[in-house]
Length: 243
Image 1 (cartoon, rainbow, N blue to C red):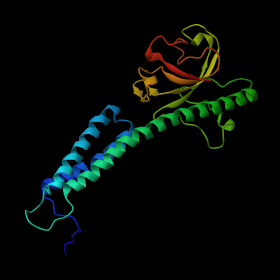
Image 2 (spheres, rainbow, N blue to C red; image 1 turned 90 degrees about the vertical axis):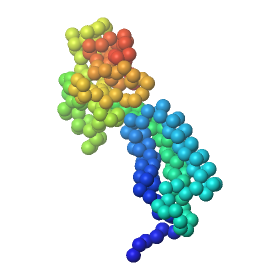
Image 3 (cartoon, rainbow, N blue to C red; image 1 turned 135 degrees about the vertical axis):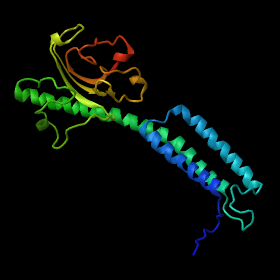
Image 4 (tube, one colour; image 1 turned 180 degrees about the horizontal axis):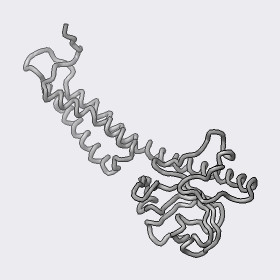
């Protein structure tokens, strides 16, 4: 027994294809905005395109045009253009709302980074008191033995997707640029290996490279990397410092 949906009329194959394709647009916007792969510049053409479709749909509805009807005769019902209007409204709302959500998420990354960097710095101070000094340098990781000084079960992972915490213990001879003094800092690095990088989609991260970092200076002449100057000479060696 066939099931009929009240208020809907049967679509031909072209209509079903159009409806199936168009209904994916809001989902695409939501997912792409969430993953950060949707350039903000595309918001304007997307909004414009959906607005045009809404206008065309309104005109078609006023003229009682039923697009992609499977057969020329039959009872009236909920038309495809009305369906497209609903999807357009959802897509427009998604396009407008998700940039705001994305901005809030980016701000949350910074807030979390600052809070965790301070917590790790306190843990390192306690470690230093108990062990007579700071731990040795760690390669894009936090030093072993620090677990006992952090909250139970709270071994922190860096907030930005693909980023890692790094404990830097640099002797004067490790530094390529003056001032060459003993330096301790906690860094957030965006490359786990050369060529394996996930840079934040932020203006301050434009030009970041393997040596770039967001860092918390414990003491010394802190910098993005031991091979870089304290005041970066180029955008590719830029760093953001939280103290």
